[in-house]
Image (cartoon, rainbow, N blue to C red):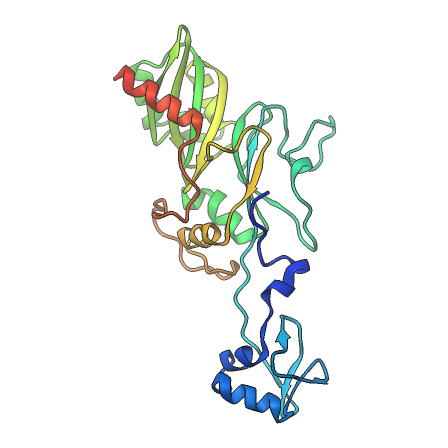
Length: 298
């Protein structure tokens, strides 16, 4: 789903450029000079004499006066896909129990594979991000970068001020101290109460274990945001969507990466969401509803 990206191998033709323009971009002279070179028979493409108006693409061998020319191409962007994981799917390619996998619903990739950014357990729904770039996945999911994960959580019971303070200050779990960055009431009915909370580590079942530590049971858990990406209202359960080139570029800049990934600039000490229309829209229906309920409660 979504607009196809230009970087797929089967779509390299879309990256083709007029030969004279490509030669000029490579620094060999003006476009008019390059047209003259071609008309003089001094340029070849893949061993054949070039003609004015010919196009070249990545992988073509271009020679001027018999010497190979290295053409300049736009750095390739990775693919990034967002998915609304429903409950009842596992975030793994192999499962001895044969349960449905999130990877069953992803489009195939030639010469690569989808990498998961973070995980969600079997009984949790919400935003999952996949990418073809390992460094991008690392920048978003590794604890050292402290990327925020926002959840809507419904618990059986209620959190009093003392328990909220404990979550903010940190509680001792079996794998060390864990805490939330923020937590606010978001309405509810009867014993089922909703809260919005933000964490930065993303440990295994961290939100559920935090609540269990306080003697509370989570009856529903939805991830609505990961870093600068929030789940858009149009993305219903089981739906997926690829980000556009502009959105991917904004995401990589937010992570401190260049267009092509791999070689990374130093990560910011504290990441802030990227401004502007390049980021996917924030405003998942759960989040809006919970916001509205929270405002009515205050």
